[in-house]
Image (cartoon, rainbow, N blue to C red):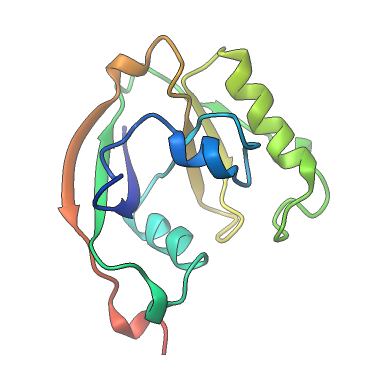
Length: 152
């Protein structure tokens, strides 16, 4: 399986989950390391853009292609288990509770979660502290620029 992540050049190769640990995210509380990735480059693009305006997007962005062996199946979050308003910003605390509990349990390397931006698409959370993390490979890193037509 290939997954994708857009980040600044100085952190794109970091697969420790430090950013999410420092700041928290939709699916994790501060203090819990998680790597946020998307199943497609297009979803990674949209997920990044909801956090910045195109005019304020940082320079020097990169896109990482991360390879995970197909033999490692992601755990899925059943939609029925999500709290009301899970797509809201900010999301209900229970969303981060769910991801934090998953990461701390260590029972799986991957958690497949629906995107709050495009509900029919999925993001893959990677637990960098899981015993199978050494099987995760940073396959490619390439320069990334947003097409200026995305936001006018």
